Length: 260
Image (tube, rainbow, N blue to C red; front, top):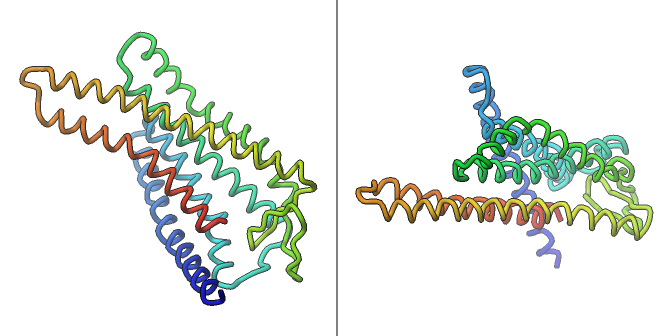
């Protein structure tokens, strides 16, 4: 059992270090790229605006959860007070929630972008493009309300190691819920929100698959259609179908292994 625990600690520390060393520079490079595009062209396209917001939230997840967990995995504990725990956990919860919501928003925008150029879809595309900042603000307010417990309940873990009942132990901090009902309600609300937005991602991916599949069939039916167009459609179909599933599985796998 001791050997298994030591192996788990080593793997966990290695995972955190790799996550931080790879994730932070990658997200920073994306942000710097979009900043360069913004200053060069004066304005980011809607798709790039959403990706910039997503990169900011992914970076915040790494900073507010990856770094503290890395320090714990390396053996450093009790390096934050109660207010530090509140700030770090609330920031992590918000950035994680915003990452899921913004990814769903990206899927919706891409679905509208590939939709047929009918009057209704054209109006919806212009409306969505104009209201992207408003959607992100609404997501932020909604998640701030949902994550209010991340301000009220976090505290420094006790030095004697005794963990109260109905407590979420994050190792560098603990979240002590006042009772069973509050503990269950928070878990249900978080789960319902995540499932709802992941459902939106799946629906958006399915719709894009259908639109691109129809486009591929039309390309096959046209005489003299470019083979490059057909190959491109097949590649987009594959990438679109795998994008959300791979990202979601990676996120959940990372959370199960690194953030138990």
